[in-house]
Length: 224
Image 1 (cartoon, helix red, strand yellow):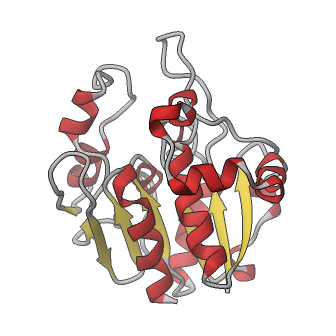
Image 2: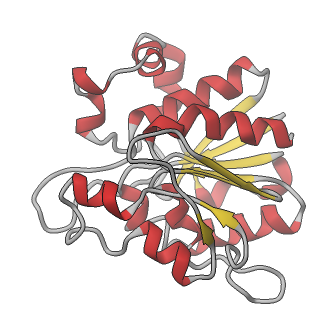
Image 3: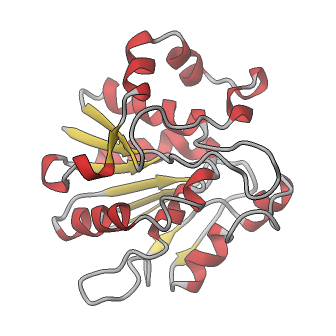
Protein backbone atom coordinates (compact mmCIF):
# COMPACT_ATOMS: atom_id res chain seq x y z
CA UNK A 1 0.00 0.00 0.00
CA UNK A 2 1.22 3.45 -0.91
CA UNK A 3 -0.56 6.30 0.88
CA UNK A 4 -0.10 9.99 0.14
CA UNK A 5 -0.60 12.41 3.03
CA UNK A 6 -1.01 16.08 2.08
CA UNK A 7 -0.41 18.79 4.66
CA UNK A 8 -1.00 22.54 4.68
CA UNK A 9 1.74 25.09 4.02
CA UNK A 10 -0.28 27.96 5.55
CA UNK A 11 0.86 29.29 8.93
CA UNK A 12 -1.10 32.51 9.53
CA UNK A 13 -4.36 32.49 11.51
CA UNK A 14 -6.25 35.14 9.58
CA UNK A 15 -5.46 38.64 10.84
CA UNK A 16 -5.11 37.61 14.50
CA UNK A 17 -1.32 37.79 14.53
CA UNK A 18 -1.25 34.17 15.72
CA UNK A 19 0.25 31.17 13.96
CA UNK A 20 -1.57 28.09 12.69
CA UNK A 21 -0.75 25.12 10.45
CA UNK A 22 -1.64 21.45 10.74
CA UNK A 23 -2.73 19.81 14.00
CA UNK A 24 0.01 17.46 15.13
CA UNK A 25 -2.26 14.69 16.47
CA UNK A 26 -4.20 14.61 13.21
CA UNK A 27 -0.97 13.92 11.37
CA UNK A 28 0.78 11.65 13.85
CA UNK A 29 -2.07 9.25 14.65
CA UNK A 30 -2.91 8.49 10.98
CA UNK A 31 0.78 8.42 10.02
CA UNK A 32 1.49 5.64 12.50
CA UNK A 33 -1.79 3.85 11.75
CA UNK A 34 -0.66 3.64 8.13
CA UNK A 35 2.94 2.65 8.90
CA UNK A 36 1.87 0.03 11.44
CA UNK A 37 -0.46 -1.46 8.81
CA UNK A 38 2.54 -1.92 6.52
CA UNK A 39 1.89 1.02 4.21
CA UNK A 40 4.49 3.19 2.53
CA UNK A 41 3.70 6.82 3.36
CA UNK A 42 4.68 9.79 1.20
CA UNK A 43 4.26 13.35 2.51
CA UNK A 44 3.48 16.39 0.36
CA UNK A 45 2.37 20.00 0.78
CA UNK A 46 1.73 22.96 -1.54
CA UNK A 47 5.15 24.54 -0.94
CA UNK A 48 7.12 21.40 -0.04
CA UNK A 49 9.62 21.21 2.79
CA UNK A 50 8.59 21.57 6.44
CA UNK A 51 4.85 22.21 6.86
CA UNK A 52 3.92 24.50 9.77
CA UNK A 53 2.78 22.76 12.94
CA UNK A 54 0.05 24.62 14.81
CA UNK A 55 1.95 25.61 17.97
CA UNK A 56 -1.06 24.87 20.19
CA UNK A 57 -1.06 21.27 18.99
CA UNK A 58 2.48 20.81 20.26
CA UNK A 59 1.70 22.09 23.77
CA UNK A 60 2.16 19.59 26.63
CA UNK A 61 -1.61 19.46 27.17
CA UNK A 62 -2.24 18.44 23.56
CA UNK A 63 0.17 15.49 23.55
CA UNK A 64 -1.06 11.97 22.84
CA UNK A 65 0.73 8.65 22.50
CA UNK A 66 1.00 9.30 18.76
CA UNK A 67 2.49 12.80 19.09
CA UNK A 68 4.95 11.61 21.72
CA UNK A 69 5.98 8.78 19.40
CA UNK A 70 6.46 11.29 16.58
CA UNK A 71 8.52 13.68 18.69
CA UNK A 72 10.87 10.83 19.55
CA UNK A 73 11.02 9.53 15.96
CA UNK A 74 13.93 11.12 14.13
CA UNK A 75 13.08 9.43 10.83
CA UNK A 76 9.51 10.71 10.93
CA UNK A 77 10.59 14.25 11.79
CA UNK A 78 13.08 14.15 8.93
CA UNK A 79 10.37 12.96 6.52
CA UNK A 80 8.06 15.75 7.65
CA UNK A 81 10.78 18.35 7.16
CA UNK A 82 11.21 17.36 3.52
CA UNK A 83 7.71 17.00 2.08
CA UNK A 84 7.35 16.93 -1.68
CA UNK A 85 5.46 19.69 -3.46
CA UNK A 86 2.04 18.89 -4.91
CA UNK A 87 3.57 19.37 -8.36
CA UNK A 88 5.78 16.34 -7.69
CA UNK A 89 3.04 13.79 -6.93
CA UNK A 90 0.64 11.85 -9.16
CA UNK A 91 -2.50 10.01 -8.11
CA UNK A 92 -1.49 7.04 -10.25
CA UNK A 93 1.43 6.31 -7.91
CA UNK A 94 -0.66 5.87 -4.76
CA UNK A 95 -3.49 3.75 -3.40
CA UNK A 96 -5.10 6.35 -1.12
CA UNK A 97 -4.99 10.05 -0.20
CA UNK A 98 -5.25 11.49 3.31
CA UNK A 99 -5.45 15.07 4.62
CA UNK A 100 -4.68 15.92 8.28
CA UNK A 101 -6.53 18.92 9.67
CA UNK A 102 -5.63 22.05 11.57
CA UNK A 103 -6.84 25.48 10.51
CA UNK A 104 -4.21 25.92 7.78
CA UNK A 105 -6.04 23.94 5.07
CA UNK A 106 -8.95 26.40 5.18
CA UNK A 107 -6.71 28.99 3.57
CA UNK A 108 -4.45 27.09 1.17
CA UNK A 109 -5.52 23.51 0.39
CA UNK A 110 -9.21 24.40 0.08
CA UNK A 111 -8.31 26.71 -2.80
CA UNK A 112 -5.25 24.94 -4.25
CA UNK A 113 -5.84 23.84 -7.89
CA UNK A 114 -3.30 21.01 -7.64
CA UNK A 115 -4.88 19.64 -4.48
CA UNK A 116 -8.37 19.86 -5.95
CA UNK A 117 -7.23 18.06 -9.13
CA UNK A 118 -5.51 15.39 -7.02
CA UNK A 119 -8.70 14.67 -5.05
CA UNK A 120 -10.76 14.49 -8.23
CA UNK A 121 -8.23 12.18 -9.87
CA UNK A 122 -8.11 9.79 -6.89
CA UNK A 123 -11.88 9.54 -6.91
CA UNK A 124 -11.99 9.03 -10.70
CA UNK A 125 -9.45 6.22 -10.36
CA UNK A 126 -11.54 4.51 -7.68
CA UNK A 127 -9.10 5.28 -4.88
CA UNK A 128 -10.18 6.42 -1.41
CA UNK A 129 -9.73 9.93 -0.04
CA UNK A 130 -9.73 10.69 3.69
CA UNK A 131 -9.77 13.97 5.62
CA UNK A 132 -10.12 14.76 9.32
CA UNK A 133 -11.31 17.76 11.37
CA UNK A 134 -10.76 20.95 9.32
CA UNK A 135 -9.30 19.01 6.39
CA UNK A 136 -12.69 18.25 4.78
CA UNK A 137 -12.30 21.90 3.75
CA UNK A 138 -10.16 20.53 0.90
CA UNK A 139 -13.37 19.20 -0.68
CA UNK A 140 -14.79 22.72 -1.08
CA UNK A 141 -14.20 23.00 -4.84
CA UNK A 142 -13.81 19.32 -5.78
CA UNK A 143 -16.38 17.99 -8.22
CA UNK A 144 -17.36 14.57 -9.58
CA UNK A 145 -17.38 13.46 -13.21
CA UNK A 146 -20.71 15.20 -13.80
CA UNK A 147 -19.44 18.50 -12.41
CA UNK A 148 -21.50 18.29 -9.22
CA UNK A 149 -19.86 18.95 -5.85
CA UNK A 150 -18.00 15.81 -4.78
CA UNK A 151 -19.76 15.81 -1.40
CA UNK A 152 -23.27 16.21 -2.83
CA UNK A 153 -25.55 13.49 -1.47
CA UNK A 154 -22.68 11.88 0.45
CA UNK A 155 -22.43 11.14 4.16
CA UNK A 156 -19.78 13.53 5.49
CA UNK A 157 -18.52 15.10 8.69
CA UNK A 158 -15.92 17.64 9.74
CA UNK A 159 -15.18 20.22 12.42
CA UNK A 160 -18.57 21.40 13.67
CA UNK A 161 -19.82 24.95 14.02
CA UNK A 162 -20.09 24.53 17.80
CA UNK A 163 -16.51 23.27 18.01
CA UNK A 164 -15.33 26.30 16.00
CA UNK A 165 -17.28 28.55 18.35
CA UNK A 166 -15.69 26.80 21.35
CA UNK A 167 -12.21 27.78 20.12
CA UNK A 168 -13.41 31.35 19.42
CA UNK A 169 -12.50 31.29 15.72
CA UNK A 170 -15.92 31.49 14.06
CA UNK A 171 -15.25 35.04 12.89
CA UNK A 172 -11.60 34.37 11.98
CA UNK A 173 -11.81 31.42 9.60
CA UNK A 174 -12.62 32.09 5.91
CA UNK A 175 -15.54 29.65 6.10
CA UNK A 176 -17.06 27.09 8.47
CA UNK A 177 -16.46 23.46 7.50
CA UNK A 178 -19.91 22.30 8.60
CA UNK A 179 -21.69 25.07 6.69
CA UNK A 180 -19.61 24.45 3.56
CA UNK A 181 -20.31 20.70 3.54
CA UNK A 182 -24.04 21.27 4.01
CA UNK A 183 -24.07 24.07 1.43
CA UNK A 184 -22.54 21.75 -1.16
CA UNK A 185 -25.23 19.13 -0.59
CA UNK A 186 -23.33 16.90 1.82
CA UNK A 187 -25.35 14.85 4.30
CA UNK A 188 -23.57 16.15 7.39
CA UNK A 189 -23.54 14.21 10.65
CA UNK A 190 -21.72 14.77 13.91
CA UNK A 191 -21.17 13.53 17.43
CA UNK A 192 -21.03 15.72 20.53
CA UNK A 193 -18.20 18.24 20.55
CA UNK A 194 -14.75 16.63 20.82
CA UNK A 195 -16.10 13.06 20.55
CA UNK A 196 -14.97 10.57 17.89
CA UNK A 197 -17.13 10.48 14.76
CA UNK A 198 -16.31 9.18 11.28
CA UNK A 199 -18.45 9.21 8.13
CA UNK A 200 -17.76 6.81 5.26
CA UNK A 201 -19.55 7.03 1.92
CA UNK A 202 -18.12 5.03 -0.94
CA UNK A 203 -14.51 6.12 -1.36
CA UNK A 204 -14.82 9.23 0.84
CA UNK A 205 -13.84 9.11 4.52
CA UNK A 206 -14.21 12.11 6.82
CA UNK A 207 -13.60 12.58 10.55
CA UNK A 208 -15.08 15.27 12.79
CA UNK A 209 -12.26 16.42 15.07
CA UNK A 210 -8.88 15.51 16.65
CA UNK A 211 -10.52 12.70 18.62
CA UNK A 212 -11.45 11.13 15.27
CA UNK A 213 -8.00 11.09 13.66
CA UNK A 214 -7.05 7.48 14.44
CA UNK A 215 -10.51 6.12 13.58
CA UNK A 216 -10.56 8.06 10.30
CA UNK A 217 -7.23 6.55 9.30
CA UNK A 218 -8.40 3.04 10.13
CA UNK A 219 -11.61 3.58 8.15
CA UNK A 220 -9.45 4.52 5.16
CA UNK A 221 -7.30 1.42 5.66
CA UNK A 222 -10.45 -0.73 5.73
CA UNK A 223 -11.31 0.51 2.23
CA UNK A 224 -7.87 -0.67 1.06
